[in-house]
Image (cartoon, rainbow, N blue to C red; front, side):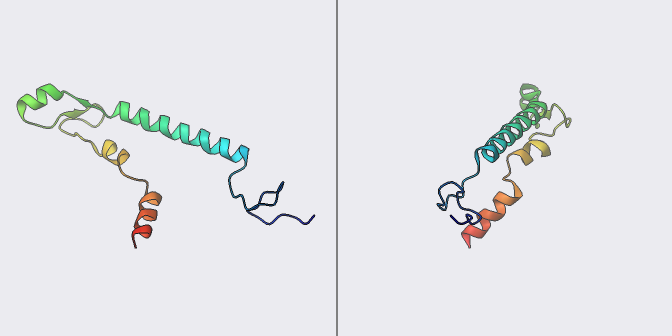
Length: 94
């Protein structure tokens, strides 16, 4: 039997370009860590003084960034697509 070409399954020779089980597990763990980091950032950057701000007619405060900063730049950035994802979407639309 000949050596399988890159991108093909070394066991069956089919064009299966799925990640190996080890690579899949690493990707899954990395995704979980990223989601946990986003959750921690959202917990730190949360609106405070919402009722008082509404009564005064001003924006609420961010618990981390300070007064009249809601939504704060950090929270806003978390809602934006990743640069690579945005670029891929732009390329698909063209």
